[in-house]
Structure formats: C-alpha cells, structure tokens
Image (tube, rainbow, N blue to C red; front, side):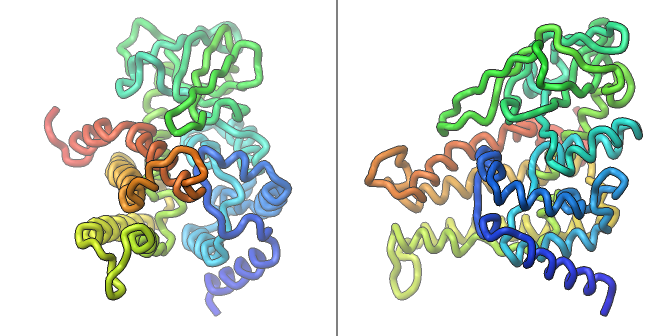
Amino acid sequence: MSNLDAFREEASTWLEANCPQEMRNRTFHWEDAHEVYDTDAGREWLSLMAERGWTAPTWPKEYGGGGLAAEEAGVLAQEMGRLKAIPALTGMGLSMIGPTLLECGTEEQKARHLPKIVSGEVSWCQGYSEPGAGSDLASLQTKAVIDGDHFVINGQKVWTSGAQHADWMFALVRTDFEASKHDGISFVLLDMHQPGVTIKPIQLISGSSPFCETFFDDAIAKREDLVGELNKGWTVGKRLLQFERSGIGGLSGGGGKKKKAKRNEFVDIAKQYIGENSGKIADSGAREKILNHSMLERSFQLTAQRVVEENRSGKTPGATTSIFKLVGANLSRDGSELKSELMGTQGAGWTGENFSENELETTKNWLSNRAVTIYGGTNEVQMNIIAKRVLGLPE
C-alpha cells in the first residue's frame, strides 16, 4: 500500500467516525453560513477538524495547519466529498488573509493570527471598496495617520461582506496623499471590536444583508499589523485578490476535486416543470440550453482540476485567476437564471403558499447570484486584467 493509499484509508476512517450527521449532505448559500456553523454540530465538527489542522490542511503545522502535501489535501477533499461532508470552517480568514499572511506576513504576524484562523476563534472581513472607489480601487480615500505605535484611521468602506459577524478586518488605507495613488496605499489589520468602528448592514434585493457599510472614526490599527511595507500595500492587496478570485473560480480547494456536473439537476427540474416525452425533456429549446450549460460547466471543472494538478506546489496562480473568476462567475449567474427559467412562473416567486421552499430559494439565488459578477472584481475588471496581464495586449 502506498503512502497516499494509507492516508486515504486513515482519512476515510476518521471522517466516517467523527463527522456529525448534521454536517453531511446539506447545501447552503455563503450568506447563511454563520447560521449553519453556529450550532452544536457545527461547533463539534470545527473543534475536531481544527485539532487535526484539517480546517487548513496544507498550512504548516507550526501555525495550526495540517501540514499536508497537495496530493494528501486532494485525497482529504475527495473523502469529504464521498461522505458529502461540508467543510468544518469557511470564510475570508482561510481563503484570503491566511494565504496572504503565509506569503507576505512577518513571522510574528503568522504566529499571532494564523492559529486563530485555523481554530475558528477569529473571523475576518475585507475593507477594500469605498463609495468612490469600487472598480477603480486605487482611488480609495480612507486615511490612516501614524501616531506613535499605531495608525489612526478615518473613512468609510462599503460592501464589507460579513462585517457584522467579523472580529478583524484586513484593509487598504491611504497613508501618503502626496504619492501617486498606487504608491500611497498601505495594507493593515484592525480589530473590529473597538469604539471607532461602526457597521451598518445593507439590505439586498434578495432579502438578505450579507454586505455592510463600515465607518471608521479614529479607529486604531497597530503598527505591528502593517502587512508589507508602508505605502506599498497595493502589491499585497493585489495578491490577496488573486487568492479571492482563485476561490471564486474553483482553484482553491474545490478545483482539484472530481466533481459531477449539475446536468441531472437541470434535467430533473425541466422534466418536473416542462414535462417529458419518451424520457426526454418535452421542449427542444430547453434541452439545448441545458446541454450547452452542462458542457461549459464540465469543461470549466476539468480545466480547473487540470490547473490544480499541474501546480503541485499548491501556489495560487497570478493574473490567470481572473480567467477562472470571470468564467466561474458567469456560470454561477447563468446556472441560477436557467433554473428559474425552467420553472416558468414558479421560478419567480417571492412569498406565498403557492410556491415551494425550493422555488422560493431558486428566486433568491437568481437574485443574489447576479452579485457574483461584481464582488471579487467585476467582470469588466477581470477582462481588463486578462487583456493586459495574460494576453499582453497594449493599454
């Protein structure tokens, strides 16, 4: 038996014995993740997985991670998929600031922040966009002034996902108003539980409030929580966005899994709402739409899997993550739109006893998934990056 086969047997046996039944075979939108994990089963699952470092399986053991090789992490993901076990922990700590600190942080920053991410003790949110600095993020105006051993921060961030549940924020702030806009930015970490931070959730058309406005009035960030060099935070900020886009695009964790396409889900919906004839969906137009979407989805999954397998080091690619973010966002948006379309008028319900829970959830997902093409960098921003950084086209 090879070492990898032995690890698979070990992981399979342990997962089967320790994963609570309540944390298996369930799906949820990221907006509702905190409700799923804030349960007895969720806390038990997190504690057990964190003890082994498997909430961050490839992170070094000295920071609380599992210390697994990329191949072992892939096996762990496959065995969790076999049990239909959901991850014990999700969030921006694992997917964004953690990888960024591993690459750009000091040893002191890694030792202080990473173990608390692995254990789920601390949750994170992102302070990037501002009312006047969205797609042109480098125009941000939130000010951070050095005062002894800390920064004093004043300004506003918007679309800060999960800020109302977060303990810490990683943020881009302007520390030099005389420098060019890209050179006067710094990357800092700050505690959200302080008097100078005010959070106001934003009600979305989907009915949820995952995004927030965040206001800083003499908020404090310690000098020791400056990541990278002073006034050189744009480079760190861009690298973090690549980690974010790799997650949205399926290159982080999920990209290496062997997934089944969602074709049967669309087929089942079409047969239920449109009808079937001799075992086929009755409408030829619906059949063609399902076929085209399923082929594109499967091609995307296989391409993401190939990229992860080719990159054995586990290092997140650079500008090419924008390709996966662009295609993945469009697939998510188009998939939810197709489900609603196949359901007809039943796929456009908002409330009422005439609609099933699944139909109402489909409407909510159709509305919320429009935002996937915006957050993490809009489709237009991704196309610009692909043109300049991947294809090398002139500006």
